[in-house]
Amino acid sequence: MAPGKPRRSLSAPLVCIVDDDISFREALEGWIGSLGFVTRAFGSAEAFLTAEDFTVVHCLLLDIQMPGLSGLDLQARLSAAGRVIPTVFITSQFDPRHERRALQAGAIGFLSKPFDRDALIAIFDSIAPPGL
Image 1 (spheres, rainbow, N blue to C red):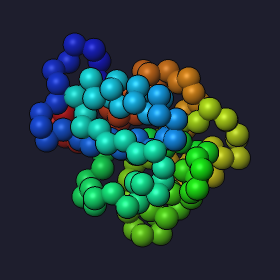
Image 2 (image 1 turned 120 degrees about the vertical axis):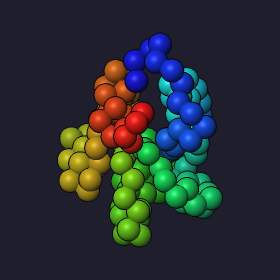
Image 3 (image 1 turned 135 degrees about the horizontal axis):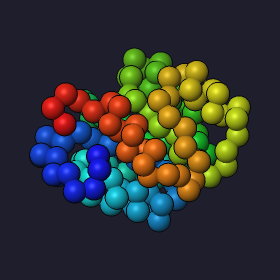
């Protein structure tokens, strides 16, 4: 969504952020919220898995390397449970093997930190529900 567009309604799409870097997670949550999305942030894959059952997650922003379950492990668990969530990986430690694995498993994007915000906005726009 380009700057200056109206904020989304209370029924705005939900973007979940899973990253163990608290400063990055909070900054990303604030920026995405300013675009009009509803956001929920989690410090670990386990915290996301034990959170309330979000019936519709518009997009999952997921760090690759975290203590405990990795982002790739979380993606695999969600897939095994039949939960298809559009997932974008964001990582500070780019590895082409991780990118290949994530995309082959259905990720819709793979961005390296720091990433181009316009690239993430383009991904959001490509999966936007009708009418947004």
